[in-house]
Image 1 (cartoon, rainbow, N blue to C red):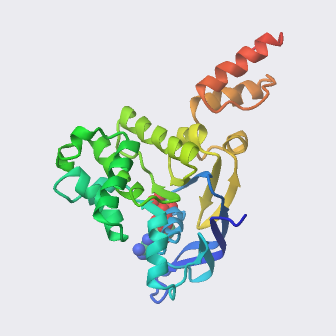
Image 2: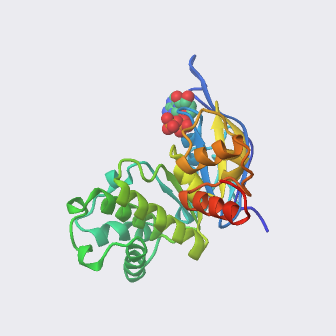
Image 3: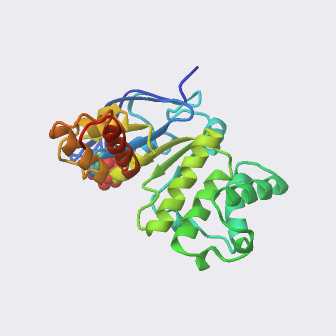
Length: 286
Ligand SMILES: Nc1ncnc2c1ncn2[C@@H]1O[C@H](COP(=O)(O)OP(=O)(O)OP(=O)(O)O)[C@@H](O)[C@H]1O
């Protein structure tokens, strides 16, 4: 089966024609399959945002190739093909609630499907369905989006992208600035979309517990290059000090360093408790 996303030897430089050219992506190659849950991590300025902007043609690679859902993204791509692609690859920017604008929640969420050519009946159906998916109760649909809580506003903004029924959702730090509850509800929602509807998730994050708890893959960027593309367990098993490790991972690594032979590195508190119980049951000492 063809990959959903294929980047081959991509380079991208800002300000190429000025004296302060800045190479944001260097020889980046990456493939993503349908149903993947990929997190992209890396220090500030490592190229994460630039990478995701290539995925729905907000920017184009200057060399190398970018192919998404069968469309080769280059400056000459036909406007109709690009529009179609953008309805299928939903991009959720940081603090997307800043782009809410309509008088009420339902109108705001309908905007996407209407813009992509749905009839008003279809747009309303899709908007209602996506608001339901993100857990916004019907009582809120005729309220102004600006009366909602921060977490609700963000869910409405994500519903606005989901209403176009994308196959790939690309998110830039979707939980930044939310409290614990708002954060969990967004992440659980993304997990459901991924597991139940096989929507591919590609998400930038700085939070290692999100990588540990939700991702199937972690792509580590540094100075515009992909430094690692691996599973969270493999990543946490070997990574050095540049990232703040989740508590369970730290304890798991400390146990291993002290000779405790765990079957696998725990990524969450539950896995940590299970691995210790399992070890005790086998007659070892934890
Ligand atoms: N519009 C721009 N003009 C000039 N340089 C830019 C522009 N946008 C990004 N850059 C530079 O390109 C490099 C990569 O930036 P990018 O925003 O892709 O990184 P990032 O990993 O997303 O960073 P952050 O975690 O801070 O969002 C950085 O050195 C940045 O300064």
